[in-house]
Length: 193
Image (cartoon, rainbow, N blue to C red; front, side, top):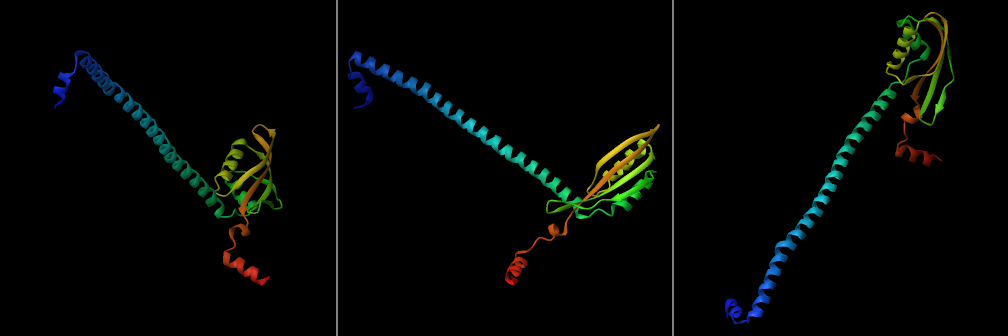
């Protein structure tokens, strides 16, 4: 027997119930299924968006890491060549900027941690114009060595004439930090003991 024949054998009340059941079933199929699918797709979209943001954060992190690595390499490159003797070097820079150094005094070296050391020189300049002082300080900064002006004192003596006391420091790596012990060398040291 086919479905149509069975449906015709049912009473009118049973046919109405079957038709209502079919309408409810069709409504469920056409309403609930799309809602479930929409909810699932919405959840998947949110997950995909979170994954996109995480991937973008990783890509952005690569750029930051590359920038930091480049900065570290530029700092390391700056320390590759040690600064020259400060008194003579500063004297040459002063002559280029029309400055007379009245006196210069080298200070003792000061260690900074285990890898770096600071050498400094105290300079006394007399009757120097502000423009020349600024150019001199700029030439110290642009020298290409790890130099800094760690202290400066300006005293006005006349119109655009100053007495200047400054301390210029040079930083360099110590030999111990440049020569890291190799594993073979440390094994030989242990054998000797």
